Length: 99
Image 1 (cartoon, rainbow, N blue to C red):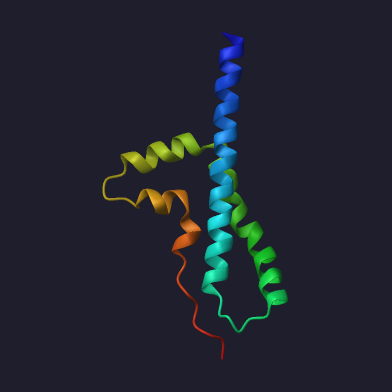
Image 2 (image 1 turned 135 degrees about the vertical axis):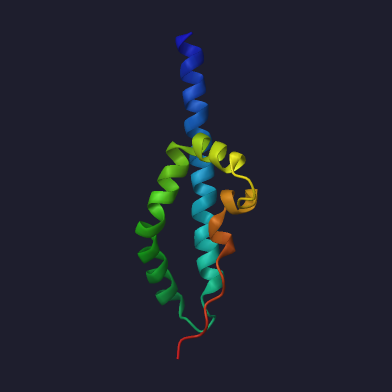
């Protein structure tokens, strides 16, 4: 029984890591898609590093508690789509250019 339980816990944790990575990639991709093309690459990278502490709690939650999060999403009537649950950063709107 111990080996079976260990396998389930490892499977849950590794699945959480994959889902956390998907969330992180969605935020990085969404951020780069939302920033104007006029922004230099060095500024983009600096800003991308600055948003990491902001998105870290959501990524950590997805890694640790993706099962309950998925259950809450599934039980919410008229909630967000599965895509928005899985990759919320992909739904970032384009920012207006700075003046």
